[in-house]
Image (cartoon, rainbow, N blue to C red; front, side, top):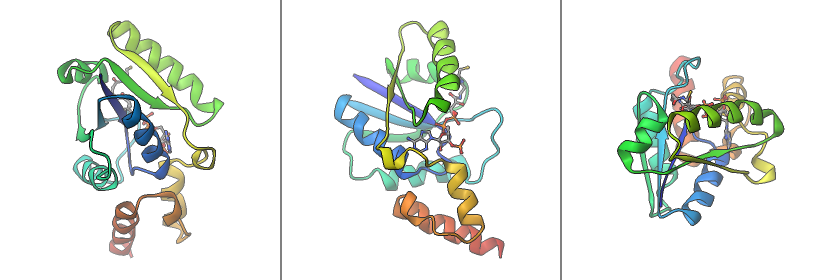
Length: 160
Ligand code: COA
């Protein structure tokens, strides 16, 4: 069974990696796909996010990293995927996920959304939080895979 794990991944965090590792144990193939959230402006360009995902997930054999435009359900159809994986960190994620899950179900009844919980100590992490800590020179490395830490430091060094 093929699953798509869509997200902004700007950048990928240890919490995302945890969800991908869980998905990789459940599904034959997992496509981790960088999509466009309508109200988010990018920190890393999509191509760079895909590169950082590929490097951070290189230890998993049944994973593919790519990007897509347009509707996630259309991308699922193109890829022959019947499952969308999403992570839920806290009850505050539920409302938006419920809305998106219902919309995707209406758009493509054959595609199921499956929710997974990350490790408790990863549950407060978000990409924005990490960018905020990093932008103020705080220690953020423990929340992200090594390739992301390197890329973020380089990015902030450019801005100084
Ligand atoms: N660990 C750490 N952080 C996590 C996480 C986890 N396990 N799961 C979610 N998050 C965080 C992300 O870092 C992100 O943080 P941010 O807001 O600071 O960037 C936030 O939770 C949620 O983002 P994400 O999971 O990346 O999804 P999103 O809400 O940005 O949605 C798409 C992105 C691409 C999935 C969505 O916009 C999409 O499907 N777009 C295509 C159009 C479409 O089909 N829309 C749906 C039908 S209406």
